[in-house]
Length: 187
Image (cartoon, rainbow, N blue to C red; front, top):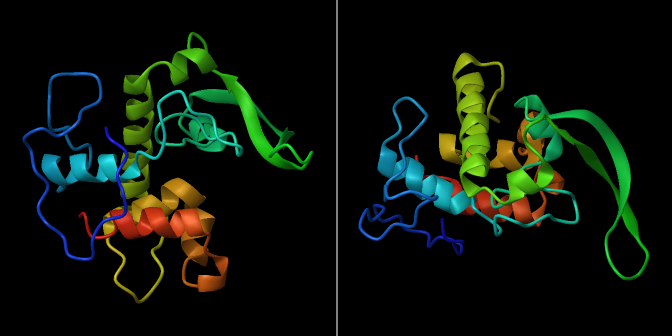
């Protein structure tokens, strides 16, 4: 999947021909979410890719979808979670980040070197969040024009508590806002 730039304010239908893909010859990805077209899902997945597959952020987000270790643990891919202090730059500053161990046979290197496994984890996460939104165990903030894809983008970046706080603009982070603006309205 290519990294995408912020979307223009008017939506155009996704183009199937020439769409980037994740490791196979299928130009369009099969949607894991009931009622969402394959084309819309592919557009969403492209919006959500924010890094190279081997990337590890200062916050210890892993891979092309910047998966957080806590979410990977929720999905059964990591265990032995703990907070650790990680450097944030050359000034000696640090921040607390979540770390853990991948469940064998998966390893950190195996996850980072395999875009397909990263995509499968992302897909499982989005399907879980979509199901929880539909069941009502996670609620979208009232008002506004947040679509399902926008809610999933916030959940991916900030989790259920971040979605609850989304109604307060003071609680929003620029990177989360950017991803929300790209993804909202895809479906």
